[in-house]
Structure formats: structure tokens, C-alpha cells
Length: 163
Image (tube, rainbow, N blue to C red):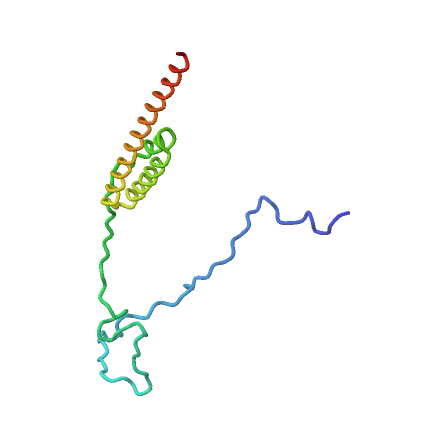
């Protein structure tokens, strides 16, 4: 099956000619800034009878300009990061190994310290850090006392059992 005119076309060795371009510029020349006589027009001080008066937009005060307020400069200063110690590792240790209730309280204060540090609240970070340290030391002390008492009881029971 053959299609009529399928193999026919321009010779490949002959380059195709581009379409002709117009010598007329696409747009007209802009109007002159000054009239041809080099005289500026005289200002008219009254509105023409067929023109409407000027009505400012709803957000423009005619006495103060657009938006009704003076422009303002905004300067954003980021707070310096607080570097208070949060005792998070110490809190987790006392939570798991020493005294569970005091370890939980110390962990809460440690997290509050971390949050205050990230928000730049230095006074809150200092207070929470101090409370976390106090509860961690207390939990460690309670854990050590309980361990010593437990060891003493085990020794006393084992000695009394062998007598």
C-alpha cells in the first residue's frame, strides 16, 4: 500500500528560504516629550467642567497620604541563646536508678529548662535548672541512703541466719 506524494518533498541539498521580514517597525515611534515648539503647556488651575473631582481610596487620608500613617522602621533582634545546664542525663539516671518520684520531678524541670533555653527566657531557664539540680541531688541522696539501708538489712539478716 502506498500513499500518494509520501516520498516527494524538497530536495535535501537545497536549504529552505526563511520567510520575508517586514521593514516596518512593529510599533510606532513614541510621542515626543515636549511639543514641537519646545514650550511647556501652561498649567490650568481649574478642572474642566466635564471631569469628576478626586476621591481618595478608602484607606488614604488626604492630609497624611496613603494608608493614613507615617512609615515605620521595624528592627528585629533575636535574643541571645541561654546556656543554662538542663541536667537531662542526670535526671534520667536518677529516675531509673535512684528514686522514681524525685526523678520524675527532676525530669520535668530539666525539660522546662530546655524549653526556656530554646525560647531565650534566661530567668526561667536559670530557675528550672536550679530546681532540676536540687531534685537530682536529693534523688541521688535518697537512692544512696536506701541502698546503704538495704545492704545493711541484707547483711544483718544473713549474719543472723548463720548464727
